Length: 344
Image (cartoon, rainbow, N blue to C red; front, side, top):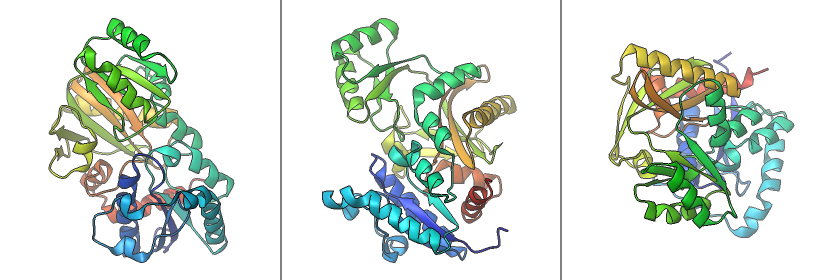
């Protein structure tokens, strides 16, 4: 079946703080799928319009500013998107490759739309996407599975900053992590080492979400486990230039070093892989996901989160793990398309 050449639409851009990352991912996804003989078009879910072929084949740096969407076009975007997807479906569309990150692309909204339209799509279904995107809910599931995770407390918009600061200073030791509950790629995240910096960190997190969390800081090695169709891939270790693996370290060349397979003993690998596979299955993921950990040793580690739409850029961790397992980037993308089509 995987020899069949497919008609594919790649969802790109979107409205989240991770728009730039999505644009880069989408172009690399589209270029790869075209190189293996498939028919591919890329659509921006914010405007609902297709990108020109020059977007896919160009070599210039992509930014949101290069593809800024007028407010009028934004307001009409969903109608255009549904219309274009409907025409594509009636013209023989095989699958949608979800190249979005964060926002409606990762929280189950577009998954629900595509399910309603009966269009196969890559990645996890609506419920799993919504659960994984919400760090509070997913951490509760980790506790149920007895997967270690850092102590946390959530706060809602509208609460008094002074009250939140008092609760955090009372219940947490410094340093502490402040971050949005439902954003990815460390958008809105701060490492607070002095209680005097808490108010500004809280305010920054609230610019990204209506619900945020304080989380105990846990120092250790950053290890991620990729899960492909329920099976775990070799672990990757990230060594960021900064104290945290923040947005800059994730998406700037030279700001992090990556080691695959990670130089950790078999016992640690087995425990992390087991936890990752259980979390993937319990949340109800499909196709692929990535589970992030901070590790001191086999008996002292925490799970940070599960990401249902791992990045697909040249710096991305999932393709790195797949390559170590003998799966090329081109093969991986085609496999994800067929897993989406075979979900029934």
